Image (cartoon, rainbow, N blue to C red; front, side, top):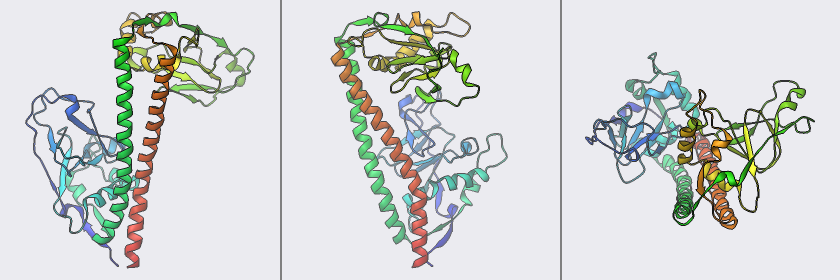
Length: 371
């Protein structure tokens, strides 16, 4: 049998270099997400970043404090050629050598829901339900020979190469989208959106529509029915080509959606509106602006005069934005829709890569047993 059992602590060592840079910008600080990858900018950056830790190229960073909260080990490898800076809460470590276990193979081992459950089970009893470094080092792993590890790491790295290629293409498309928007700011006069839209309120009095929906993260999603069908006669019907949002606290949350394919029912508390003339306004173009941070700031400012910070339709009508010809609007919508499609595909690729990690581990172990 070509399998060896190792104690992780014998092959890794801590790294504790501080950056000694007191005022790192947000975009210079990295975090680690649930997908076990770095992201920038980090969501929270302290006023003094001198104690932030350095993650050199090919070093690991993980947050042992958040395992209990997230039921996942947030861990990533710095695969770039530059050091990253992370919060002092992170643990930084590296492999002492790769004679027994390869760097990427270790990451594949740790990149599975099975290992996440293992870490979660072994969390301590502290307030944060974290994991001690000593407990992390005590983990025992079964590993095949280096030759077999190299074989399965090559498969994994091939998948990563395809992923990174797709990411670069998506980044280029994002630049095109941002460039389009910035060009409109400079070349097109702002117009008041109220001239192009009108409120829509169609009550489902005859009960012809029975597809109940809700607004989740900006998407219109089917909702579970919790009461009798007759109650839905008081709901409003939203037809394709309608934008909808909840008026209370909109400036803080900014959740707004677009009905694209089929009529749906939504609570009468929502505000819905449509284009007065579709030859002058493509509402999907308007939606691009409504989802930008500057519009959220406008909504927050305009809704601060009530207890619930309600953003009414008449206040929305005061918003000004570049309104080019309908042909240009349609072109921009096409580009943005392509970007959204590629983002969904990218997310799917990442999920498949994570799903394949335990398959690679199982394959390498089974092959070792046959040797």
